[in-house]
Image 1 (spheres, rainbow, N blue to C red):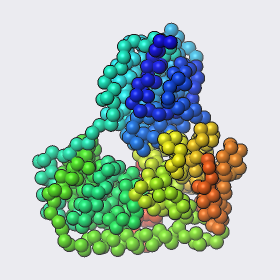
Image 2 (tube, rainbow, N blue to C red):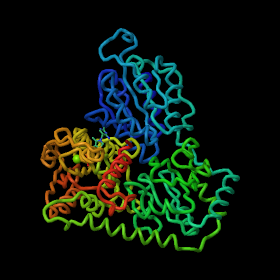
Image 3 (cartoon, protein in one colour):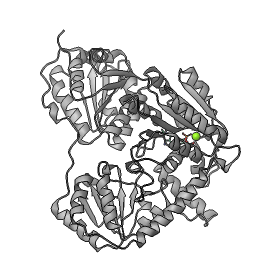
Image 4 (cartoon, rainbow, N blue to C red):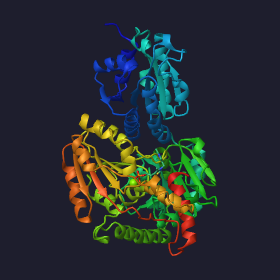
Length: 564
Ligand SMILES: Cc1ncc(C[n+]2csc(CCOP(=O)(O)OP(=O)(O)O)c2C)c(N)n1
Ligand SMILES: [Mg+2]
């Protein structure tokens, strides 16, 4: 059989290392799926195309390698779009494929008509319809190159007859399709950074996701400068929580020690982060920012020096040049405050806090304590992000992903499926609110179907919990009928799907439910029934200042979580 455009595309994806395609088959996609059937690539059929986009995104976030999802004509592809925003916002290289009606039917308001290039315009760095076989090799190459260059989403539409057409031409330059290389800051910029660091008394180093791979240098720099290392939520996974240098996060998922350190240091060095919550950053301008992306420099806080460069090679150069500091007073103060904050967290998550009710912090801490040392946590969005983000004590070899820039509810399970498909022997734990789980709970069937042993831990408060807080913070009466909802028996649901289900209603049941769920072979749901009226910590507010002021500040805090 001669090669078709579909088999040419699949051949290319195979050659560049794509192992799976997540999608939902149908009409125009049939020729594509047929090419997958003949290949080494695994077709992971999902229950909802948003789940396919999320699964691909989860993979791409974790590995930085291209991941692929597919949806068929019109409605099938429409479902991809919401999930793709995860990849777009977190800069993960994803190729989205849309099937499309045959070219002869275009422009006649035929059934399932959409304008995919218009629909995918916002979420994609590159979107193109392949109109002829001759166009395919060049456009496929360009799309993948664009996804890696962003990184972000590239989208291609294939009319059904084009997919089945005889391939023309061959793909060349496959070797160029890979993540871009790191680069060091220029010599002149290094000199300027060194001069400012040498001049400063106290230095704090803020580490974002861009610091992956640079941990040894960060430790060395911290030791040399007696500088606390603080992190963004995406940076949290990089080091163990109990590394004495790793003081904690900044913001609502963070500590008072870190907030004070950032506000009071002489110099804040931000590396590999586009941390968006300006209200937690210093306003006085003593900030240096180092990042690969020139467009992110200086946009979140008044910044004295912005330098383009990747974290790892730039830190190496800095280590060759910066002078050691000896004064440990600032370091000691931050360490002291951090210890107190940690003790407070321990109290809040103590299972003995209430006799008959489970506090959500205890769920996060129990999951953290029971997880393997190389587990992957996938967080959802809502109050539950605060519980998971603040109470998980990461090991440094675990991974933590979520919807940290898109802040979308209902994204954890889909991403967890994708991550689990990369390695079915790795422990993958989705921590999600009940509202988030309900949104795409059909994707639990994707896990069952494809033997993806994902463990989903549901914080069950029968409410869109964060919304209660949002309403109260702006002086509105929470609209209970809109916020609260009934849940199914999640454990029974899991079993009905062919998975495993466990329930914890009382503190005494939590650890057993979790350890049993983590021990079973196959996907499982843990229904953790938690108190609904738990208040989050506000590291930037002194809680002694109760009353109206605190309530007003909750608004600020909530906006910091939801992005407004
Ligand atoms: C897709 C999407 N829909 C709506 C929102 C607005 N929103 C933010 S948090 C939240 C509540 C989530 O409820 P749940 O999953 O139960 O988590 P909880 O806050 O109760 O922990 C909502 C609706 C959003 N961010 N994303
Ligand atoms: Mg909820």
